[in-house]
Length: 376
Ligand SMILES: Nc1ncnc2c1ncn2[C@@H]1O[C@H](COP(=O)(O)OP(=O)(O)O)[C@@H](O)[C@H]1O
Ligand SMILES: [Mg+2]
Image 1 (cartoon, rainbow, N blue to C red):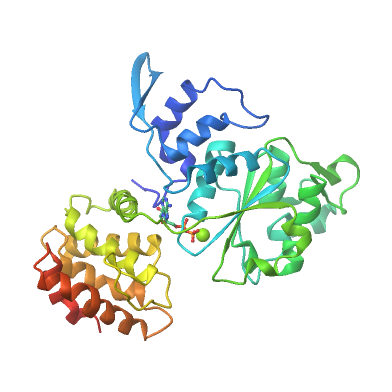
Image 2 (cartoon, rainbow, N blue to C red):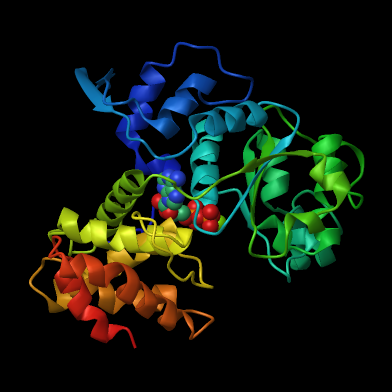
């Protein structure tokens, strides 16, 4: 049987959505699938509380998982912006869950997270608004039938959320095609006459953009476009234990359906992995010792990736239990990307942070230290 590698958010949590819908008593903004409070619960979780719902004549219950860790008020403000006349722009370092949050918001608010545009240097206006089926265009001239809608067209027509990923990577003139759609809430198709040539945005329509501070900056967005967005800066996770929880949860999700989900990932090994990312990212250990910082992003998303690889490694070539050395073996690929000097950063970390802990015989740090031979 064929299996999707990754389901869109709106299909990933059927029980949660059923439970949330059944318990959603608050009014919904026009065009929304859920009330703002329920969107919030979907993203921040029900804090262990089970929500009851009926299915197939049975009463069931479901606890809503926490999906986003960090500032709860940031999430609430984001939800408010979604209901306003401005777009939402999530800004921050790579790997801070901007795309993740935007997918979850779009799925909860509009029931559809797939209306997505990927910003790139080569993107054109017709990938955002609409293009034409050229065979039909030549045969019949411009007609509604010959028009091929792109995400912005569909989002406006159907009152849904459009996601614009890495918006600042798109050329200015392409970014600015959003202007009239965002302020006048109308998309004009000059080739078509009459009402076919005008798409009026329906209630529920809005745009969530994401922008990485490491790419071409947000400063390079035109000020006209900036005015049409509310900005939210998404910071890296500050709390180590929270980050461990995120990485553990994500690695478990990634392993599902791979055939390696029975691999054991001991908490202590997970701690080594996440502590390494956390400390190199902040340039300081928990005990206040300075460590070198890498030019690559030591983000939570990268930690998730190393965790996943380590688990697969343990499953394929180990004893189905992740050992400290599996983490080290898979670390360099994530930490050393554009700059070979980042290997030195890792070695420095092993000398300055790992060694003292190994000498004190703390937990698995000794085994972690021994595995430094893989840092080449
Ligand atoms: N604060 C956070 N809460 C939940 N998950 C997070 C958080 N920060 C990072 N992650 C995890 O890391 C990944 C972030 O990836 P992504 O959303 O693609 O980052 P970005 O778009 O900011 O570059 C997600 O899969 C998510 O699981
Ligand atoms: Mg992203």
